[in-house]
Length: 74
Image: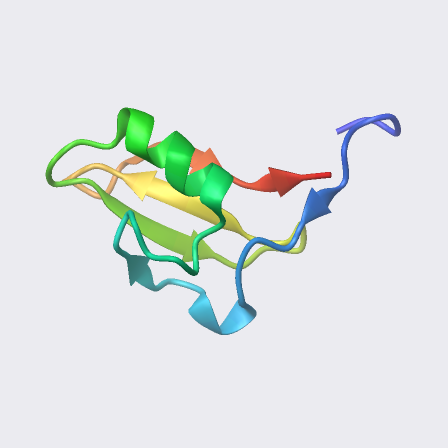
């Protein structure tokens, strides 16, 4: 991200690190739930990863491979 890039926003709580969430869990920011709903398939899981940038939501396939990472920016 360059100096003109958007600053990441906190999208979850640090204590959620490594936890799996249902795709429709209201604790997940709405824009992320909407993006996940567009590509998630049966057997996929959504986990929160606490990062220095404010956290990311990781959509993983049924083998634990990363499909997509989601975050919020201002």
